[in-house]
Image 1 (cartoon, helix red, strand yellow):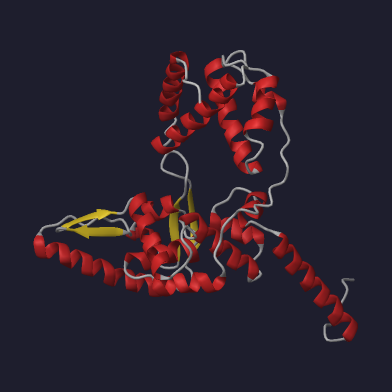
Image 2 (cartoon, one colour):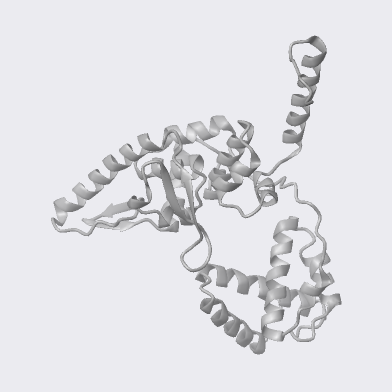
Amino acid sequence: MPRRSSALNVRLDEYAVQLRKRKRREQTIVEYKRIISHAFGALEAAGLECTPKRIGEEEVYFLHNEVYGRLEPLTARNQLAVFGTFLKRVGNNPVVENMRIEWPQDLRIHAKWLEPHQAKALKDAAFGMERIVVHLELDCLMRRCEVMRLRMQDFRGSHIDILGKGRAGGKPRSIPYHPKTPLELRYLDEVREVLIGRAQQREPIVTVPDAVVIWEKFGRLGSCKESSIDRMLKTVAERAELPLGSVSNHVLRRTGARILMRSGTPTTTIMKILGHSSESQTIKYLGLNLDDMKAGMELADRFMEGLEKGTIRYEPAV
């Protein structure tokens, strides 16, 4: 990729400052800068306009067709939106927004999830804090950031208070206990007691985090971060002999949502548990594919056959 100009570097740094003021995470800022740098590098390599204020439809269509054309529609749309927001903020150029590009439907054929027997194998292989993380993500459909933010006092006896993703500490929501949650909470108390006791053997006066998912090392206690949770899932997946790279936080959350869907749970209910803002967002997240469509058609066919054979009774609405 051609070397970025110093002027673009300056603009990217200025934009990063704006994003920090809006409470965006550093990881998000780094990813935005990468997406924007890649777009400008592609434009420069193609000999197209690279000044934010002067970029027009020709450059946007080039990115849409040549740079993002091989990506999944959702990923392509998000990356072009990041680029468009940068143009608007830094160059006062709303070209991407004004073009109102239409995107094809994304059937999410590359979305990953576990089959029910794999999910069970993962649960059986999880121990200690691993088991708690698997329960919260697979059974309760919580995001990794929500697991990290969860405090012991957020378990309210019959429901869990959750701080979702977003700025200003996250968007709050509440979900009811999963049928297995009371059992998992008793197990959690046992795990925490072991970790705290181990720490107190080295340091009698030790500060105990109120975070749910914690670690102990050399007499110190701390709350688990992203990397710790990722390592837990990798370890459990290896122990369960699941394919390399098949388990992640998103995979567990999507798997739990699909299990709810397959059990007949209404999409609006799944939407509420996931913390989505729209039913269409949940439908995309579920990764509905041809197999799901086929299963729906087979259910309809069995229903019609049951009516013909008299094994199913149907009373039309009056």
